[in-house]
Image 1 (cartoon, rainbow, N blue to C red):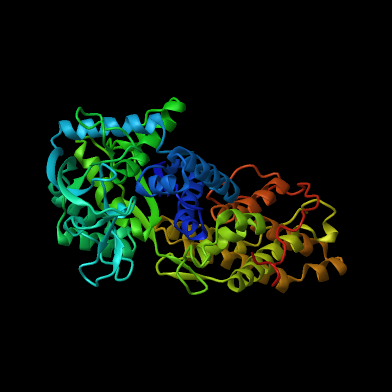
Image 2: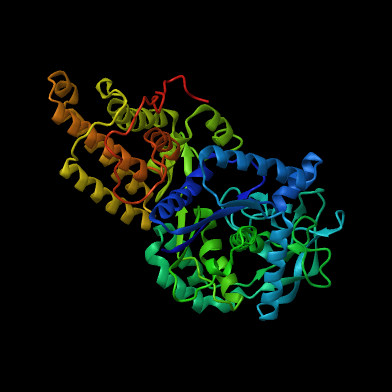
Length: 537
């Protein structure tokens, strides 16, 4: 039995959660459900990322407090994850006293270890606002293409601005010109961890997708630069050192620490020792999965491992970074201005959560950018979920001749071997975080069931009163369905949960299982409703 931490990227509390986010997150839930079925101890953690400049910008525009914005979106995210069946052990927020205390303790420890230091350098200051302003708060001319853009990244050529590029700009808060003043901040000595991170990369790249390998390799090759730990903000976690009352801890360092603080909080609330999960005792198999989009790769493969190393404590470093590509809509990049973001609340109010989960896995951007259209979504739902899986379950369990009882029969040994083979092959794929291939293998078993049913024609056997062979066929199909409830549980948990309840099967196990002959079946309602061309948002 292994101890598994599954950390899913923290959703930034500044906009509606959309289907593209879910494509990045759903793999974490698949892994959690799979590992629990294997008997592993699992903690699946995440939360709402509450701090940072975009939230304060929005608060100013809307004459609201950052807290009100954060709480509004946190409530939405919780609702989405519950409706989608995301099996978090804890979903929390970075704007909690518990997280703040954990981050502050980390900062003090890194300072004690010599990895956090003070640095004074020129920075953009807005005299009208009376504050230092940073990247997104500054409007500058791109030195590469000449476009006027926000100072985090050029909106035309995607050039990422350097600190010196921001020294001559305009404050986006008040519109006034900025000037250069010396500013003192705390910095994290990321540059000291190059060799250790390179070694970690070489060890773990076998488990990473191509995008993760390429981006991490590029970052290591270009050389690691120390990063500012503090910013001139009033919304965020307070700095636990004298002289920094007007600054807050930079969101990049405190948000990724949430993977640690969330485990700590869960363990405190359940009388467990969090170090049993995060500290390596060289005896227990411990594994850390981090699931996120490709725009967050470096934070999970470089920044977070460096923080863990800087504590000088025996943390298990994240071995499996599961980075998805981007989901487009109708072959266009998601955009607020185009209104094509596919927000999850309307999607979940309209469609079956298992259908949305299925699409995110079967057609999601696992290894390359993918595309969503309602036509494709409808076709996938109707052909794969309704016609294949739903039909096999319905015509087996609702066969009129059963009289609500599983007949006494014998299992077809060939089908049993295929079931056992599928467990093995799906497991191999899931351990590699190859969700699309794993789901395809599971659905191949559904095809096996439909083919077996059609070839053996139980309706003919029943009408010819060939009771023994009829019983064998139905018995084999029911046992196949029993095992499909295990194999498909990581992917479509609501549907297989209905079947398990109907079959009075309580547990999910990653092994061949049967239910007894004579089990009372009753009648099961159709699992899915067919979608039509009218079923669009």
